[in-house]
Image (cartoon, rainbow, N blue to C red; front, side, top):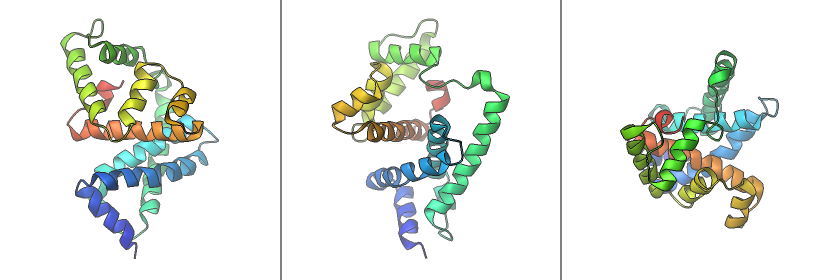
Length: 198
């Protein structure tokens, strides 16, 4: 039962890069739709829940036993993430800033683009910018390029879609996967993505 799912989990645990890409390509859109149906159409919340669920699942993949399908297991994780996000939104609305809206994040992104430390951030910002730049350069496919276009060069999703020769929806989905890949790569290198991406 669920042998294909167990095989994929084993390949992910072994660090198979192709399996990593397949995992995100296969499950992000499905989890996003699952979350969207439970957030009254809140695309931002659905995207965040899907991203967090996939990231958490990767960290806990050794716990997947194959008793249920991988999607069923991921959906349960996504439900938990939706509950956590809803509670966090109620309790800390003033602290819930998106990466795009955060002044601190914007300064950090600009420092990565220019190679200079962000104002008032000193050595920590220089180290953080360097770590972020290295991880962006190592992301698979065009993920690093897409994140740089979006957050360092202020490209719209429509412009990114045109550059990639794809639709707006496909570019938006790819950007979401790129953000998950970035968070996972930062965590795999021992960085707290919350410090690098406030």
